Amino acid sequence: MSSVLYDAQGPRAKRRNILYTTGFLVVLAAVLWWVYKALDDKGQLEWLLWKPFFSGTEAYSTYIWPGLQNTLKAAALSMVIALPLGATLGIARLSDHAWIRIPVAVVVEFFRAIPVLVLMIFGLALFAEYTDVSSDDRPLYAVVTGLVLYNASVLAEIVRAGILALPKGQSEAALAIGLRKNQVMRLILLPQSVTAMLPAIVSQLVVIVKDTALGGAVLTFPELLASANPMSGYYGANTIASFTVIAVIYVIINFSLTSLASWLEGRLRRRKKSTGAVLTAQDVADIAGTASTGTAA
Image (cartoon, rainbow, N blue to C red):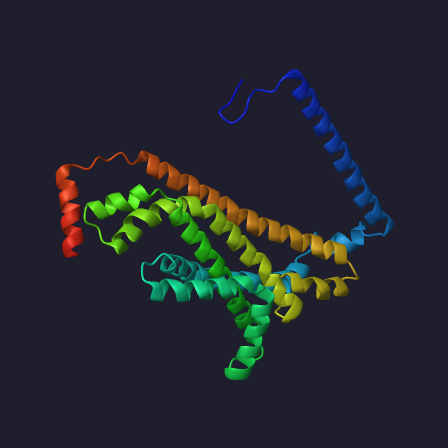
């Protein structure tokens, strides 16, 4: 059966795909067996090393949960600040005024070009030198600062690209009925582009969650990944078990985030398809009148 995107496979193509799939599964099984054998030979699969994670809550309450709290706190603060800041910068880059567009473009390109770890280290030095933030709170402030500066600049480019991807007829039609530029952006362009931007935005939010680990590796920020070393030392060098459990927690968090975004994207698309209202000439005149006077209809 043919598709719009590709032609139906013939007998030779089907046999070739079956051969490739079988070869891939064989290689994958061999790699998994090699990993299992290597871990087993090193004694990393002994029950004693995995027992703390399945026979009690001490490992979770003492090490994992405090680290997870700090990870979620830093990620949540970064998201709450970076999202509106990135949207504002992205919209400002589309301004018709050069005195707004050019400085914002310089800021976005500057922070987008610097590694996020450098921004975290710079933030830590900044808070230590010029603020009264306590030494216990400086790593959190530095991690959030670095994540906000870098991810807000990336999100600004996502917002700008999402708006520019819309057909020009959208804004031209809105301007033709008398809407002001800010109303075109707020009422026409942003609501339509958010659905297209959502996957890229969520991918960047996942990056924020993972990049909190940089603070633990360099700035002694007590986040989730940083809890692995003291936990493995306390329970007898179960390093592989500790990192495996932490990796599973990261997968659960990021999968939940992407699943929520997928549900939200589907809901937004269904709402757009279900809106079948038709504007009359009087409705258009009322909108144009509201746009020119700035008052509600």
